[in-house]
Length: 206
Image (tube, rainbow, N blue to C red):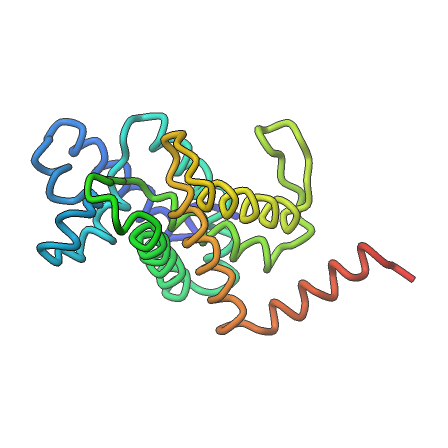
């Protein structure tokens, strides 16, 4: 799918890149946008649950999120429409932030940033719609998209529950991915039925 035919994906890519670059040069901008548990709880600065998704810690963090969005966003946007796609992206971003808020509610020092929740939602939603599409994990290991999504959600759930401290926002990944799944199930049940039929035939063709 041509990126130029996916205006929302293109706009989100440009926005994330420009805002992140600006934030790397302006600490005050980061402080005003980052997910900060203390400021959200005590000052009710709930906007941070959204704004934190448009800044990134470093170029590699930005690159990995935008790479996934570049490859997966256009297909999902084409499948559900531009405005619905924007809704999935923002809802998944919020879902990831809400799950992070629940997981780290008692940790007043917890801070987070990045589009991981939103990208996770786009990934899981796209996996339901294109379940047998082959993707290459680490550009090397071929895998059906739906299997990758299931493993991704399972790993994120385990890592979040185990409070794995590896600098990755597993709670945001899990919340965003589950939001993407829920939205497809609620808004586009036809895709779910089609996906189930495709996977069933692939697993048991007789």
